Image (cartoon, rainbow, N blue to C red; front, side, top):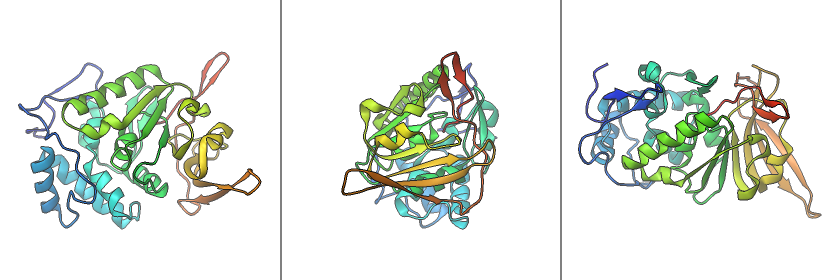
Length: 290
């Protein structure tokens, strides 16, 4: 793959993508989602992104091609989420070994026994929680950082928690590098290291929660930290056979609440890396993340 302008010029020792950019880097902008990039054609999109974001045409072309498949498979359906996908440079969140595969359908290994979830799953889960400007969103499983990056184009209040300390530190470094390059929206991502099973009580309540790892039940602390009428998406089921549930917390007049569940894949199952939980003797399982 030929590398040009906003593409890789070297890779860090960790295997994560590092980049050197020409003087000035990406334009210091935070584009309004209702004003760009255009959704009219691949050529219009690439032209707008090169002018306003300084990104390279070959990755932009791959991103647009995958975008068309997201629409065909009905994994994204409103313009705000379409633009969030199109603005997020997925190639910056994969490893050196997978840079040429950044926009493939499938999940990719990012080390530490975890993966970056495929773009179709990320898009459908994100669109399903219907994030609105100003919503407070919690992600369980920071992983590569890609999921929170997408969310940051939908709201300026994104919180993400990761249990694997070196992975959390590495991903924080990716965000900081992107912020330095001009991706100002990633300043709205607050990263934390800890056990996601218990959520982030000090920042609760949340309007939306997105869980990027599989578990056999909905953690009670996450339900408690979800606002009334809040929405969570979470993969629930035995290992390798999870249903991705959309969970809505419905308040009652007496102060109690009920939980409404629906399956965003209408009964289809996916395989997610198991949820990590801290036990008395250490970490049990492994944590997926985006």
